[in-house]
Image (cartoon, rainbow, N blue to C red; front, side):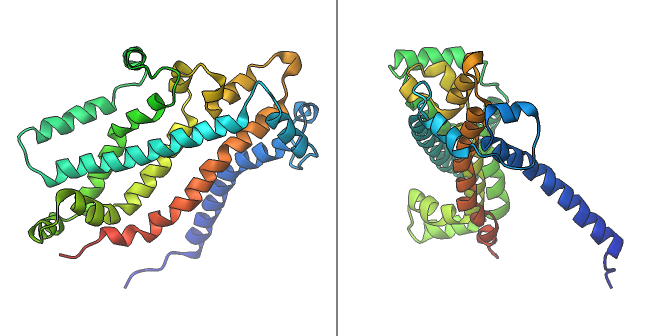
Length: 280
């Protein structure tokens, strides 16, 4: 007969969880509080109470001609959404190809993808810049999401998930029923992969949304810049025009879409776990 955990251990567990929750939410709370305060109040120091400058900071951010926030939000949404879709779908498709097929170069292909995974982005930045310049894609949004088709980290996660949750017997049964490979992938594999797809879609969206290096390298037109570049530009403003309230407000605006995406997709992480279990 299993022993029930002691009351002291239960209380300790709750205390630890409460502390971790506080640490996770505290910085978001401070961010929102500072978004409601003006520059002078923020300079005075920390405060638990909200200020009275929320609408003023919002108007200052939206009316700043040098910081086109609305176009920045649009550009970031386009790039992040397409990056998440391309990364998850094509990484799952690549993982399915290596998982469901046996061919001579299977192991070398897997090793090659893993080698790309450990290569820093900065190493290939100049070559990437030269390629997109020759292709006429400099100062466009295409270089910001098209490379997401090849996402080694997402591929590895998908491959590991397939090994634990996708029985090959299910794929073979679909083939015997005359189901084509793409139809098998889209109708059978994708529903089973929903939890993995949801997790990686959130991570890919957040990574693309927060990406600063590549957009700063590729984009020069102010109307095509994404939010991280605009936030950096606002922080580099002239000292006399620098407004911490605007900075905190812009950062607050920038995290809202991330929270919405997480809320929209997080249900699949828990509710979709059962889809990965198939009894043989």
